[in-house]
Amino acid sequence: MLENFLNKISQRYASKWLVLLFDIMVVSASFFIAYLIRYNFQLDFDFSILIKQIPYVMITAAISLISVGSYKGVVRFTGFKDIINVIIGANILATILICCTFLSRKLFGDDSIFNISGSIIYIHLLLNILFLIGSKLFIKSLYTQITQDVHKTANVLIFGAGNSGMLTYDAIQNDTKSGFQVVGFIDDDERKIGKKINLIKVYGFDEITYDFIKKYKVEDVIISIQNIDPTRLLQITGNLFALGLKVKIVPPVQSWIDGDLSVGQIKEVKIEDLLGREPINIKNPDLEDQYDNKVILITGAAGSIGSEICRKASLYNYKKLILVDNAESALYDIQQEFKQQGLKHIDAIVADVRNKTRIDQIFNQYKPKIVFHAAAYKHVPLMENNPFEAVSVNIEGTKNVADVAVKHSVDKFVLISTDKAVNPTNVMGATKRIAELYVTCLKGKGHNTKFITTRFGNVLGSNGSVIPLFKKQIEKGGPLTVTHKEITRFFMTIPEACQLVLEAAAMGNGGEIFVFDMGEPVKIFNLAKNMIILSGLRYPEDVDIKITGLRPGEKIYEELLADGENTKKTYHEKIMIAKSRFVDIDKVEKGINKLTSINSLTQPLEIVSSIKSLIPEYISNNSTYEVLDTKNNPNL
Image 1 (tube, helix red, strand yellow):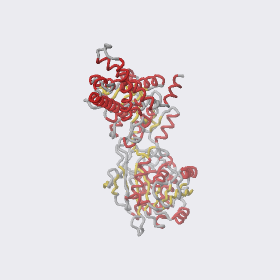
Image 2: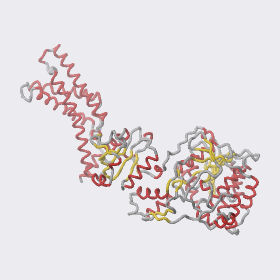
Image 3: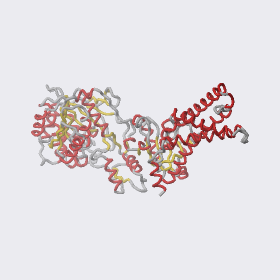
């Protein structure tokens, strides 16, 4: 019942006129107390004069408080600016009383009701500041205490005792529904450790132990440090997770609403925050010119990468957006998403890149000028068992779209590749490397189409990535499956990947392979542990991790550059161009033509053997195709 009552009154605020009346009554009471103090708490003064002066003081107080607007503030949210307003209003009141006293003595003598002793005015000023501020803070504190007693609160620590930490503390204190009770600050600055801020102690990171958490019943830590180094964030969260704490993070100041932080903006730490590097941010005004009034075609438009490229491209002033995919349900979903946004000039087409005649028909109808080729088979274990399909989509499909792009004089063709194409150990990576080689061979063959390749690592949240798999396994109670305890991968977010692709299309002049500085690789085992803890569970008590062994074709470490490649810088420090080694175009084209002529009845060993003859650096790992490497190289 009390909770319902508090919920109702929490939705309402006292009338500003009621607040003004309350403040005037406080001023009147303090005026009476000022008289008592002046006369040493002896009733040796004329009550009739006091009674006559109180209405005059009340009117003057109303004028003073209205002039500064102190009565307009919400008492339960009283802050520093409100306190300053009260002090200014009290000083205006004292100034008016002094001026009126001076004039009344000149005009009416000492018997005027406007004649107030200077000592009483100064005592009254101090009492007004004390009582007006004290009453507001008392009401604020009382309201906060009552609501916290009724609503369940969690004890939290704020990591960062700087300006951002103070703003976070104020946001929590001013929001009675935040559900947080700050019990301390954490900071690395030794000058702050041991001191108190707002009567709350600042602790060193080393002091946060199991005993400390148990003593103060700490449940969460809010990281409130602007522009924190991602590596440092990873270290901090790892240590906090190990203590069984939940970790939240304050967003960058530029994303605060109207420049103010609200508790609702404090979010749980996400896996994206723990990549160990700064997220890529590209601001290139040339992008708008690149896509302005252009027909843009995206293959694999229903996939996680393709669909995000569609979303990014839809933000520009395109002429027409053509979405091509053979997965009708997923393609329908992205089509409906755009329809609900009211976007026009977007056509969704069900087609297979393996059907060259169909692709040619689409290009002939729409005349695209920019093509993003994201259609591909990318699941390593599946392609290891089905090499024909990998060849037919990743190689032949790419060849079909690229050849048709040349035929129809497309301006730019952007191939979406993968870090698994570098020194490949599996069929999927090898076929993607051959796709890279094919578009490289098309450079400078008497046409105007510019072929550009983008190569990046694993994408968080994409179809088939480890994150959705871990989430499903956690929902089922585990265990999480990791193939090797030391396995590492480079990671980026889907928006980052697609922003890189769009930038490559604008930056590329043809023939480049763009690679992205993805920072340090992430150990999958640690990623799994962090996901368990981010889900509010404990490792290994609640959810365990099972090591299953490397899958066919899988390698422990991924690379972004092949042997014999190095990089040159671009205008953006995170984007580089791989200097590719010499490619024998005639040999590559003959090998690709041989591969694409293989039919589905051909044995997998024969198909993979042809791939290996074209990609000598392709050495199988944990796969049945390792026998081909041994046969070709007896020293292995």
